[in-house]
Image 1 (tube, chains in turn green, red):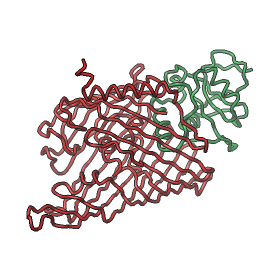
Image 2 (spheres, helix red, strand yellow):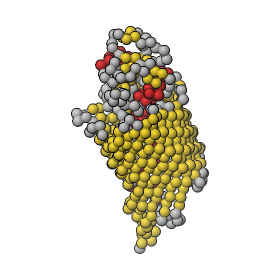
Image 3 (cartoon, helix red, strand yellow):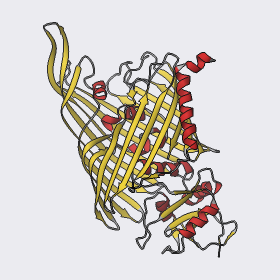
Image 4 (cartoon, one colour):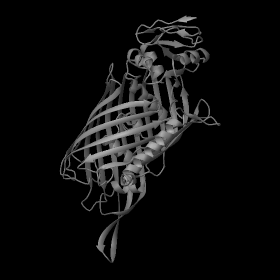
Length: 128
Length: 393
């Protein structure tokens, strides 16, 4: 059972097997800009995302990454069309995000945390 | 109404709408994974362009151009952890200036020679991309760059085969400290270039059928990046083509005079991009030098151009907003007898669907020096409006 508390935009959540228990802002930006691709144990990071128009995605970009949503999209597009990285996996809504994180080792994503979820995931506090 | 539907522009617009409608309903919004494990991404974009006093893409009679279409496919295959293949095929159709023939944009094999927590080194062989400033961030294919058009990107679109990627060897070294990366890339190449593109650059006029008989090129780029926060680059590119050219003499007994000579271009500059809380600011300053040697009847000629780009991106409610200023100054006068061209652009963008972006830009331009063959070089002040529909998977 997991209860997330939304303090500054979206909360960062990951698969329970994730070897780390907290993140800092630089680490979060490195993960979501697809520059950091493995966890500390060498396992691959699987980045999940919501659609650009999703309020949680906008909140996540502005308050957590402190970057414009279109700037994040542009970073991903450039990596895709220079053959460097695949795009993060698109989730239709937060429920799908939760299910995918719970079932995908190495996965990381974000939710608003406004309700209880009966799925086993890990929340990652973000330090400045 | 029938006349309207039969018009060339209307047909082109309808064709674009049909294609985009098909793409949006085809549910292809993420990369295609092939049975053999490759990943394929693609894009298609269609642009409408209106301009006054200058028909700069095509010589349209009514000043509206809808004949600007880009289509591309990118393939990535990872053989194992160390060996990868990356390639892209593009088609760029832009009125009378680009024919739309598919072109192998880049294609190279990448081998990771060093893979340590702080150090990585990749070696590249094949058609490698010339890392020119923030080329991927500012002037790559239109759907992935901030603005639909800028003087830089017009040149990049039009002479993409000549300036973008060349066949050769390169390396890419990255040093990571914390989460910040210092990167040094370099390559030595044999410049290619479509003959019709080269013939627009060299010889400048009066020559026929230039044929390449020697080329060399290299680039290097040093970047420092704090992910999603700041990026700085110092880069330099040099390309040289030697030519056998035939000068028309007007003499029926000796119609052409054969000469040997060449052309080279070099660019060096700094690029800075900073993300503030809700604003991305970019500054790029470049010195370009073009030299014609042993090929012009007027003797060797060199042209120095100083280019400045200042760009800011932010949000305006649900829309993405962009403002940019670009200046190109030359130490010699251009065909409009001016030494400076300025472009001020304002743009908005809207992500209509996860895979579809619609953007519109308005530009005020003072000067014509970055246009190769402006149809109205006497009007130094002019405007253009561009609207682009871009779909990518």
